[in-house]
Image (cartoon, rainbow, N blue to C red; front, top):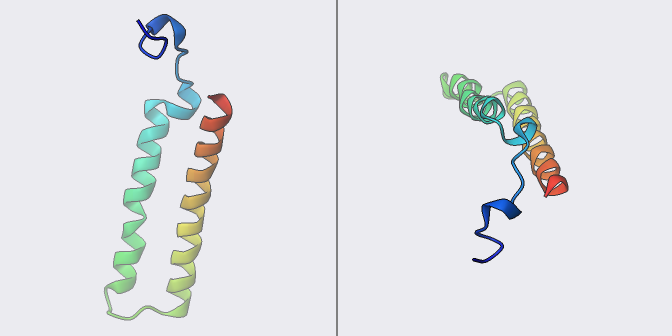
Length: 76
């Protein structure tokens, strides 16, 4: 049996990075990020303030995703 398929040669996932709570929080954050975008488009105009808020929100989500990616790589 190859080492890649041998259950004894694997180590368990860290629940602080890949646990169900973390995954649900990330999914909820990404799904809820559509709410401000939809509200901004409700009046068919996007003001500079709304655009800045959406940019900040997108940046925050990207930083969170990058931090989880880095922590996953470090643990691997």
